[in-house]
Image 1 (cartoon, rainbow, N blue to C red):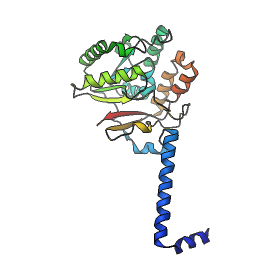
Image 2 (cartoon, rainbow, N blue to C red; image 1 turned 30 degrees about the vertical axis):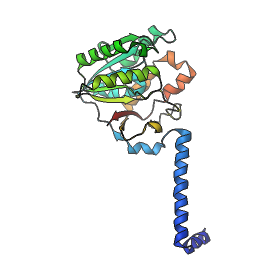
Image 3 (tube, rainbow, N blue to C red; image 1 turned 30 degrees about the horizontal axis):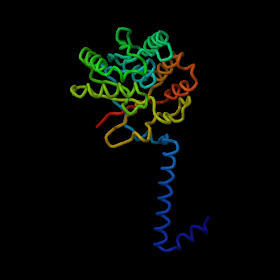
Image 4 (cartoon, rainbow, N blue to C red; image 1 turned 45 degrees about the horizontal axis):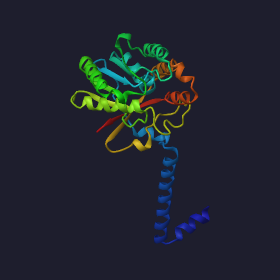
Amino acid sequence: MIKLVKNYLNITKHHKFIYAFILVVLWGAGYIAYFRYFGALPQATIALFQEIEAPKASDRIVVFSPHEDDESLALGGYIAQAESNGAQVFIVFATDGNHRNKKETRLKESQSATEILGVPYENLQYYDYPDTELSAHKLELTTSINNTLNNVKPNIVFVSDKMDIHSDHKELGLAIADSVKTMPNINLYTYIIHYKAYPRPQAFRPNDFLLPPVKLLNPSTTWYKFSLNSHDFDKKNEAVLKYKSQLKTPFLHSLMVSFIRQNEIFAKGN
């Protein structure tokens, strides 16, 4: 090793520059290969994300959930803390969850899960549009959304991101984005549930951090983390586990438990 160092010190400045350039290229290529293969950021990058402001007692928060379970997966911890801090939280379920003829089961599961998170039953709203068919009800959906926003008058709204690859999630995200354009007092945050190779890994990793998909990182969007304390983590975990009808399906099970991590992640357009 000493001999190698001496040999390096003896080479010309020109060669040193070349070797340094090669090292930088290899380092960069390594990270690019990592991102392309895994589609995820390294765990250490969680430190680069800013914390979203903690919910306050004065907040009125509306969570739009495409299906019964998305609210707990995406921000169960945030909801639990909001309720603990005295904020008013309202949850809207856009579809009936009847894709596999489990409407009544998922209805009851959503009520059990949200009760654990501390949300009063009277703050739940069910639009009851057909599961997987939101795109066929655009006008009615917009009317429902505007009625909710005008009645509740929230200052914070969460909804599925328009880049989510599930059609209902995308449609709901687009509809909300259009509605809040005329409501400047609303802070809109979005979340991702369905996206290629997300989260990574798709497994129960409660000590890991949840990080946004690499392909969704861009200058027009700011991603925020919400770090969970032990109370919020436990409440979220308990709420997610109430969706037993979904957890019985192997691929859904691995996806759902992947969201039980040390933080939640949200996007806000700049």
